[in-house]
Amino acid sequence: MKPINLRSFAQKVSKNKVAFKKYLGKVEKKAPKNLYSTMLQINKEVWDEVDCLTCANCCKKMTPTFTNKDVTRIAAHLDMTTTEFKDKWLYYDEKDGDWMNTKQPCQFLNSKNNMCSIYEVRPADCSGFPHFTKKNPTLYLHVHQQNIQYCPATYRMVEKLIEKL
Image 1 (cartoon, rainbow, N blue to C red):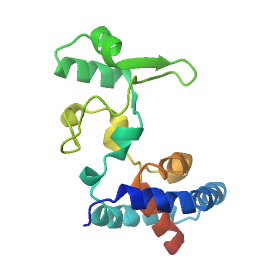
Image 2: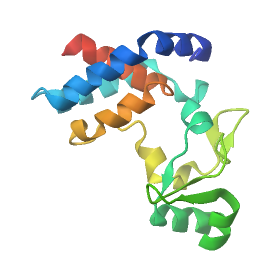
Image 3: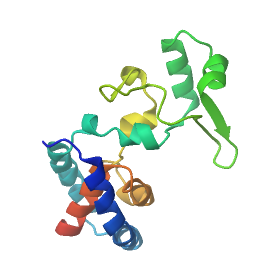
Image 4: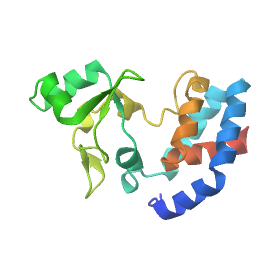
């Protein structure tokens, strides 16, 4: 497994983002019957190639949504009230109805080693990211269209999807 070269990744995204998004849009409209099993296979292959700890772009450039369960669990872990936790680190997005980080990179990212300081209790959105193995993958193809510009694993997944389908 090679470390992620973020400069090289950004160049590949710049070159292929439009085509990849278009491809995912086509798959979303007319999904092949074997999409879920193909995604499970690709998931295994991608994680043999991609080391998230050499990247952490998801934590640096994106924000998870925090459910009320997440807020309660993380606040308790940090020995805070949910109100203290929200006031210190989150804002409420009226449009989407989501609690989100007020800053980037994520306040829980250790910039020296790209590790999460609350990994054991991290938000469900983080623990499921990049959402390759969801039972109905067509519901997440629009998410992958967004994530290809941030996540080398998602980018690689799309490359493999194009090869296999």
